[in-house]
Length: 402
Image (cartoon, rainbow, N blue to C red):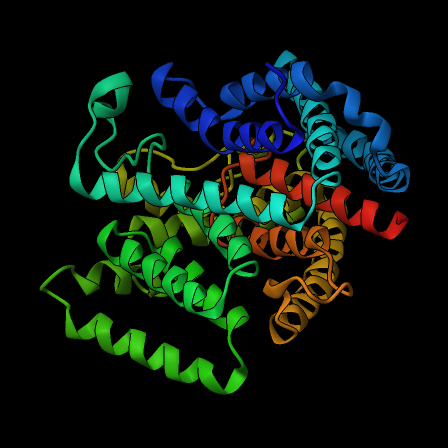
């Protein structure tokens, strides 16, 4: 039976979102990289012929950045006495595989029309919403999920679920009528308070900022805050979230881990004279006061390998060059944000204005939503979010080419 490009694309993106977390739990691996590798092998096996449609300019630009990174990495390993281990080499190859697999999926997507892309996003959204509702009703102990008290099948924890459903629902909203966007905002808020996920609440605010005109935003925020405190102690405990928003003077481990991410940046830059501590070597960053406080409270050093959020890991390992990459992202973020606000006001969901293509909207939404993983909560280079971000870059490259 021949599978259509739309069905193949939906299947591969679904695997990208769900499979790494499932492998992580089922096989008790140390990171999502193992599951992502399985996903990449499937992508290679099913869509390698699509590479002929890739945007050569975008590929060339990324390869140029990678080339510029090499001397920085040489100096980083030299000044910090870092070691290039077998794991480092394997990680480099895996990063290359992520790069090429994102090309394959991007060039499947460019063949699809507005209706196909909308259908794929709606299916993914329904699946993710189903898993969230299922987690509220049932506890799964099969396949190793009994070892994770807060798991949301197939994800091991709420933050992993949030970093998957947030970008998908955010992107889907641009293809839907306003009344359905209201539902997406509401369901993310409900999931946030019931599943105890601050990241989901952040995404719900994110949707409000992009879906509505500026004069309506304070009204939505006020309503949400009123509901939040009105039902405090009835359906959820507000102090759980308030503690995580208190960045000063608290002893909440989640907050301290986040602060440690920023502390790592400063320590790594000073330790390496601005070159970074080297790819995959963030754990070799000297431990600061926050790290020691975390150890005194929990008896272990936490999030030493992922930096808490991706920007921390990127700058700590790549130094000034990492800051340069973040600056490039911020430029893309601002450009994509302006574009997305324009599509909302132009009623893009009606698909009557050729000025805004589905690929442009899809890629811009993926780029903007990636800011959460970059600056608030991430788990390294080998995450579904990074692969989806790279897909967005290639999609934007293909649009400029056309």
